[in-house]
Length: 259
Ligand SMILES: Nc1ncnc2c1ncn2[C@@H]1O[C@H](COP(=O)(O)OP(=O)(O)O)[C@@H](O)[C@H]1O
Ligand SMILES: [Mg+2]
Image (cartoon, rainbow, N blue to C red; front, side, top):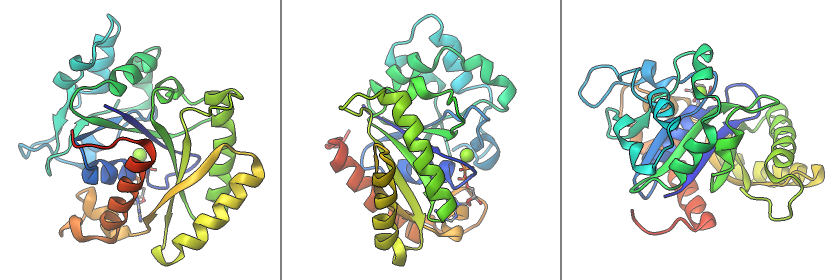
């Protein structure tokens, strides 16, 4: 139904966790697609719904093999697995060496995700290098979300990446599609101040991007979500902040209605 691409400018601010938590609280059915060219994490992090491990051979690579002969959106579902907790996932490549298996398929995959019947797709695109491999997928997104911690370094990197990504995706077009949004991970008490400061920095740089929300900096909530810590994740600060972000994004993108 719609594609949301999540990525970071540099480092490991929490892209995978953000993709998971947004998909988990998304008001419609959502599927996580691991599109990180450096390799996915979820096969190692989370169990399948049946209690055993996720099958590493079923996911983006098997889908990309099908995509070479053209791909209709409903051909995506046979490659999807269900994680414990009920979220659907397309597992990513295991290592960066396998990324050749996806080369040339990003655009086809993006088009299929955008038109997937029955669910929105949240794509974990990992860290963007100077020449982001999944840029052709991002062109099909309703929005590209850049995740950054609210440190001066990470905000500056998100700004620089937003400028580069805007040149690459928008090419100077005044329409600026897909929109680029910055998602801050911050102490909720500082969220308003950090949002204002970051927007000033983005606007001064001419980056075609604005802050679209703030997720709580909540290490315990993040670990619960990835199964590394026990306890109920659904009451955590992280999940509560994600609910607000998901609602705001839906309204901003016009992705309303239950799917
Ligand atoms: N909102 C958050 N608050 C606190 N810690 C977080 C948050 N999101 C992720 N983390 C932690 O940051 C580290 C990196 O997270 P991960 O999602 O794997 O990042 P990435 O995909 O960017 O490499 C993990 O230890 C994770 O638990
Ligand atoms: Mg990751």
